[in-house]
Length: 135
Image (cartoon, rainbow, N blue to C red; front, side, top):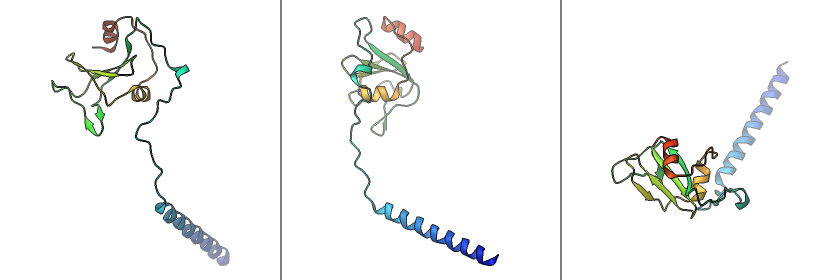
């Protein structure tokens, strides 16, 4: 009985040493290069077509919007509860609760597609879209 236990303990300690050696080896490996910009994950055939009666897609962004490590703030002081517009020309615009709108050049369609949910409504006018989002 004691022999089995000591053999099992020895095998367990050897497995621990092997895993610690593997962890030490992987810590020395270089991290893979990450591209600065991530391409849009949707192929063109799966993107929604841009129609003339809808100027773009919009979504709510209720949390503070962090861009390049900084919280984005409107000139009126608002920093949350945004409406984000993805326009047909691949530009992204932000609208605060006070109604101020500005293009955000640090965001693009790929960012919008990664962060938006599925499209649930098409709105013929901007006013109807804003009303649907509660603005």
